[in-house]
Length: 111
Image (tube, rainbow, N blue to C red; front, side):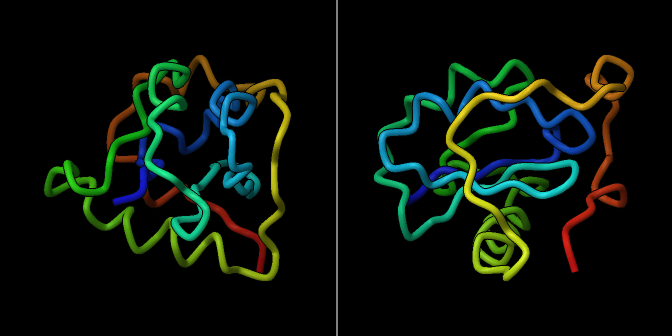
């Protein structure tokens, strides 16, 4: 199963993970990155790069992470999704959001 980006990424948007992806399967929105499951080869090289542990294998997702399986797939297909291949600076207020739980309601994605 592919890897997925989960809630800890919301409002932080660290992009260390995108530079190591051999398949360039990350897409970005305003405050979150997602993994396109059709491109992910399950190599796991992105997992240790995430400073907030937001990336997990979909087959190992816990109950709170399971909704992100469908979310990553849907966001990757969204017409407003942009492929991202190079690291960018995290969002300006990432430090304040880093330890915040239950950030799902803050997810923004292009219309």
